[in-house]
Image 1 (tube, one colour):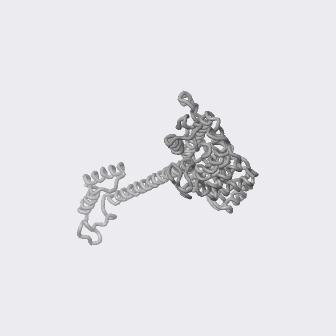
Image 2 (spheres, helix red, strand yellow):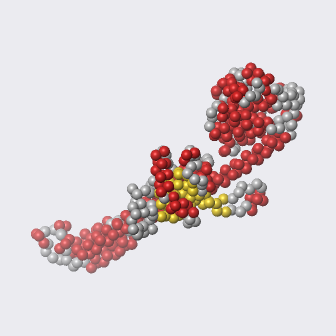
Length: 469
């Protein structure tokens, strides 16, 4: 009996320390205890076999010991369930933060990235309204009537009705929201008393949550020495404020921690996007300088790219293309001839007729331009226009022999602007044509070299401006 009890006690202690489930050895030990105890006294209730013994009538405190065992197992199970719940919650939060970071990183410009971060945090904490305060406010795509004051936008709304509700809330609690946007703490919460309750006790909770976006950044280095000595600093990207209205409970601590985690991870991605944008801008400035330097070598082509860009933008607007298209055409016009940097000077400056070999050589410049610009993510939208601006509407152009509307629209617009400037400016092999002469040639080439509809629109636009009448 004592041996069996000691065995049971030892195994129970080992079990409590390991946290494992009830092993078969312990079950066997308990059964041995039943048999040993039951063999000492007659069985109650007419039982005639130890397997049928009632544990609550077993002698020597066995029932109490078993009650202790049951209690210990229950407490172990409860602790394991609580720990499992905490682990699952932590996993879900990390998974949410990871997915949100991936979503933010998938954007190619800062305004889309910020909007995605706002959407992710707003969904995670189940907020009703969201506001952004900061220098990037002008990056948000909003209608003119949606801007309520400089440096602030209502973010995260999907419908005019949602925007009106958020705007109404801002007007009512403008002072409180503006105050939260200026506090330096990374994360802060405030309880706005919607019901006018005296001595409101919020116990560290709140229905307004402010998150300050900060990111480490530096200016892009222009040389190796600068790259090694470039100082890094904390950049303020603005403040996001999330609000729960009176129909929801205040933010809980776990939600605040999750929002802070999302903001920190998202801010790091935003900083990278901003830095990449600066690098892209620096590269664009460098390429533009190369174009100007290349054109400066030839007095006949100086300023050509800028004029082509301006004319292409004018034709795009005349055809009611949006400002994104106009911006793309501006860069396409500025950079369409960058590939000529790889063309021999004797060919570019030749005053007489080109030989077949020389013409074949100069025809490579659209492909060279494409190769120069292709590594730039910001210029992916203009690559087709740059490559195909010498294609002909009848399929007789280069480099790929495209025809009709298979030629990208931007390329067809760019071609018309390029041809017009070539005709109306002085070249090494001929003088400049008058606008009237140039318009005549363009009418003749419509449908052969150039898109006939775009040519008609272009000539109509010139007429509206009084050019070539």
